[in-house]
Image (cartoon, rainbow, N blue to C red):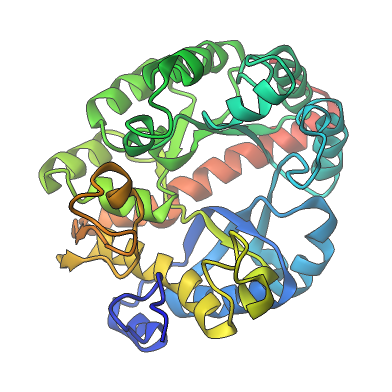
Length: 370
């Protein structure tokens, strides 16, 4: 029987959900990609079990009505380009402008500007390595429109240190990790709207760097999404240092999972695709989604110290002599004090959403300028 990469420990995630404390509030998952009706129904089950009340999702524009049928008012929208388009120049350029307006009409308060280093590969296909830089002209045009509509910005910059040591090791093509923050810092000042930098700002490995970034830019917030990455790197920090960081920036760090749902996770026929390789039965799809909530709640709430149940191929990527692709990293719980846990899980996101909603409502009457 093949090993389930989301359940190396053979856990019953439905039973495991009952082992967590019953929180007197619902958790906000501020970073997800929810698509596919059958997959979303499984995600809803995992949300119910693990106390997720609301989810902010980069749902494809065309799927919004169907996903709303399943999640109802629990769904919040983040505008994204048409990632399925074969014309990436248009998808991140002129077509994105129309989609931002359409998402705004659907009530979206946020726009995602994806600028992971691998977008350079797409740019090179068009003969211009700078085409999709975070501060490229077409990005500025989209940001100007979004700001005029009162929408906040989410962005993905940089990537794990493990990737810069391997797939991005050619700095002449991908730049250094540090270089990816220069356009971000300029834009944080140029567009003084609300910002969320996904995946702990792209640098969970370096709390000192994140401290400087947050100190310099009071309009910046971080989400804790990308479960495998967070488990691997945040578990390495001394718990005292991690808690001190969260204390210092209480209200600016928000919970997220980066769960991606798709009906491709439910079909054996898609097993050889990227999504199908993660799961291709309803049981494995549920484990894929529930495992992220199990691992993240274990990280933030408990004193667990042992292997993660989720395989992390990055270990073998950087140390192929010591690791196999199905190996898992250490998961060391941080046992956050109640006030920090509540801020992370709900208060920070709720306050940020209230601010975003107020700006969005105002802009619907009087367009704001960045």
